[in-house]
Image (cartoon, rainbow, N blue to C red):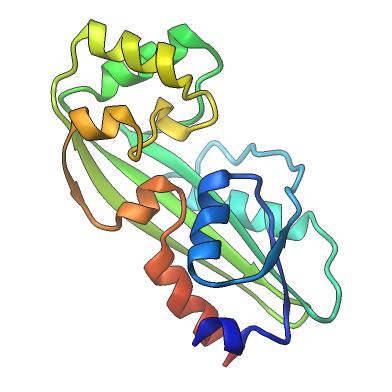
Length: 193
């Protein structure tokens, strides 16, 4: 099993995301967290997973690692109407984002970079998420109660809005939460093999 395979490694999660931490704990991994303080800008020509691949790699390369370290860095965006939708800066932007997603299908794209001193690999996953039409009252309630300012696309699928507003998802649920765990599990096994 994975915890035994990684027992000789010091695992570092380059994130403060409580959701990503919880996922790694559920895999049975022991790890330290060391958020990467990086510039999350990207070339204007980049689209979709090119953006998240680039940022996940930047986060991974921003941290110094030792011989025994295995670093995991990740980035997630919402991709809608051919553009990246990041984290809202305030109430009004969160409302605007959710209003634009309501009644539409968008993509959630996450990239993960796994790195040790010998090698680096980056992979990504895409999930399609369809929202039902949302009323202004529902959107305002969610933003007021949950303050989704730390979430790409201004929502957390695991929160109230996901319970009442999402009609269907096509692909990985954990990817929408912030890390494609099925892919990460297999990629970690391949990485250390």
